[in-house]
Image 1 (tube, helix red, strand yellow):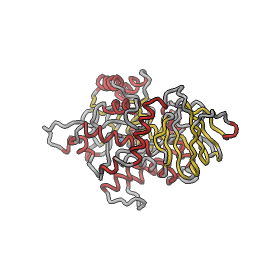
Image 2: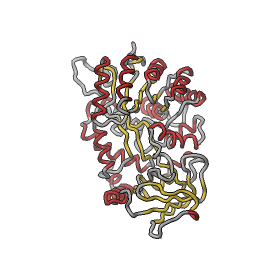
Image 3: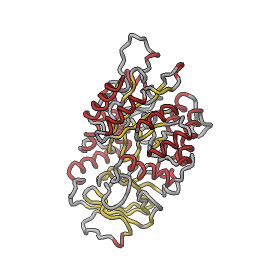
Image 4: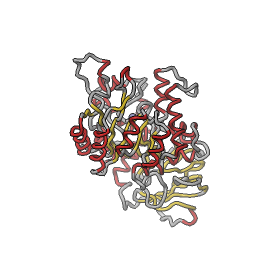
Length: 434
Ligand SMILES: [Zn+2]
């Protein structure tokens, strides 16, 4: 239930103040405002946490990190003490949908068919603010699910400092094979004309055209659905042919854009990997041979472990912490197999299926299924930045963008510390102070 009191919460007012400060130029490169952050310890994105370290920020970037004693700090630097807290790089979620909200509030079909685009954009603005408050400073947002190019506009408003939110890398409409996605044709009268959840394409020419149209309208990544419930009795089958997949990947790569592919069935995952895609989303049905091929070809895996848990809670009477549903077991199997094979695993949750701002549930799942807290944190920082091809993100080192977050306690010892965010800075601008 959403209420006005929530909208007028202290955190929101502070966020608005921070945005105003940012708009006045505090994050402009070369601006005089220098900040010295003094937490209990710093985890830079690699190795162990360093007790007693400080971080110097100016011009929107990290200037220095290390023991405060050896740091040349300007006399007029603002000093922010963060006692008991660990400073970590701003977190990255590689699979989000800011234009969706939890399906137990409104089903996916009803969001796409009945909710006005303006309403969905208004919600998305709040989702973006909630995400930033939770310490996630970058999202790769994988499809607007029926709101055309709205993500491009939201990204612009955030980048300009008009509204608070994480850095967005957007996929716009996403591309699906004709009549393979949702709202599923079989559930409605055949003569109904419904808004669709993605851009439909048939044949190499239309598929390549869709890539080029989405790139031209602002897509940073190209998102393709390689399978969906198109089989007899609704089983998951590949949707595009290998020829169509190869053509879309080539059209994306030639423009410098990478390709993220939704795929759950082993056949579709293998076909996508052979077509040259960059990341596999979900991948729940991947075999050991297919994960091995992914490792060999440098294709990253984004496990989205929280989505089946959320779906289980909404529609299958699953109680959080209770016996896993078959879908959750399949997701766990894939994650553990991918780890054993040595596939690069990036943090991506499919948030939007569940509440924005609770993105850290995915890291808790990765730890529950075998990663150390530090491995899970790397999947959401340095490893995620590597998948994005953006080494200036996900790390606290001299020259990196000043996206830093402080949490109570030590998340390298207990991942649950991510639920206690006490400070958020993005691009040198403070968005949360307690
Ligand atoms: Zn998704």
